[in-house]
Image (cartoon, rainbow, N blue to C red):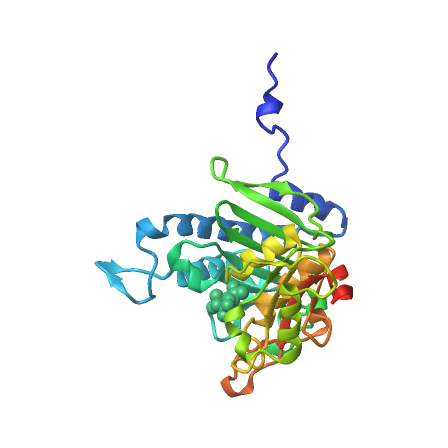
Amino acid sequence: MDHAADTFRTDLMTITRHVLNEQSRHPESRGDLTILLSHIVLGCKFVASAVNKAGLAKLTGLAGETNGEEQKKLDVLSNEVFVNALVSSGRTCVLVSEEDEKATFVDPKLRGKYCVCFDPLDGSSNIDCGVSIGTIFGIYMIKNQDTVTLEEVLQPGKDMIAAGYCMYGSSCTLVLSTGNGVNGFTLDPSLGEFIMTHPDIKIPPKGKIYSVNEGNAKNWDTPTAKYVEKCKYPTDGSSPKSLRYIGSMVADVHRTLLYGGIFLYPADKKSPSGKLRVMYEVFPMSFLMEEAGGQSFTGKGRVMDERAKLVVQTTTLIAVVQTCLMLIHKRDVRRG
Ligand code: AHM
Ligand code: MG
């Protein structure tokens, strides 16, 4: 007997099908978010392909370097791809990218109602050695696209309506939430489609892993140092946690979502406001973490209650600094 379904999946939940299903839960929807997400997915596919070919195509190295002919650094190329994809969707009015110092206000003729904050290629220190890197994005709705100001872009994290990341690793995985749980999709290169492989991701209730750059330990404050010490030398008779740290937020958060545990990038004497950027790193990951049943803290309170600040001295939207990011499951918080 031929059991094709035993060998091949024959009922494929592509990311497009999933997003359309989600859309049908909102009969009033005009499909704008669906269109926007399809443009983001296109950007992710392009970057996945560029990352795969990076060594061959000599895309690694510094922007501006020439190698016979002008080469573009991968993160610059990725940014261009996402900016073009987002603008051409006709559904965005403001773009906030890690690669651009200033927020980009879309030409009024092409404007839609969404603001997208994104890091086109996060984990820059890992790009040139082939370690997992990723794209992070978060989406806000803007009340009036024609009159939108920078002030309106600096919304609190809790107003975000969708977020996701795409990890370019041993496989290419896109994790997405539109506020109704978290789902993961893996790119099937032969189909050129993201297929749902991780439905309804929930962070495991208890984690055995802690993830932090311990090279910064000498600059930590006492509570951070004590917390990490307890991970290694627990005082309650439990086993020590394992340390895993890749240095690519997408990969470290992805592992935390799937295996559980804690990821943190605390403030320290060297970076008194922390390193990770609120709008396109911390908020989207916190959105996903909460949707998956986890929690995200600044060290003082819930991340999503925060609002990014404008850094006046540069008159641009950077800033977006955070005192501490901890992504942790609720039970670990209580055990603290
Ligand atoms: P980047 O935006 O320059 O790539 O920096 C962000 C990255 C995160 O992906 C990662 O969590 C962190 O920086 C690692 O920093 P460090 O090398 O200081 O541990
Ligand atoms: Mg980054």
